[in-house]
Image (cartoon, rainbow, N blue to C red):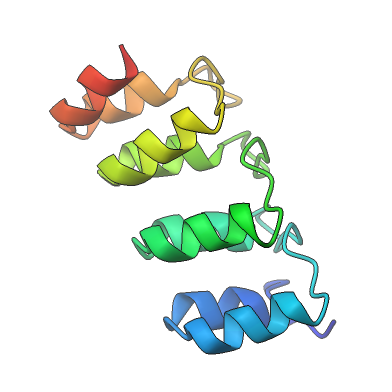
Length: 127
């Protein structure tokens, strides 16, 4: 699959731009849902950053996206969701078995991120 200079493929961009029909088409036609860009960001992480609950669930349920994947700094999808206040996505990832005690390369956990960014509801959810 073609990639841009940042290592992103068509799936990354379709998710970023909310193109649900295109995302479904790409997955139905075999695009690699766990492909990482140069920073280690997967399409699932992109969906979390762009706050798309439906897209997150679709990628995991139908596309087989790995909820335990890590970027180059060892950030997980749960960490991104916790930092950005994606409460329902945090709940979903936890139900799917996301590792609540995962640590970045510098030792930061999802709970620390939620606390640092003032995400009180997520702090409570992670405790």
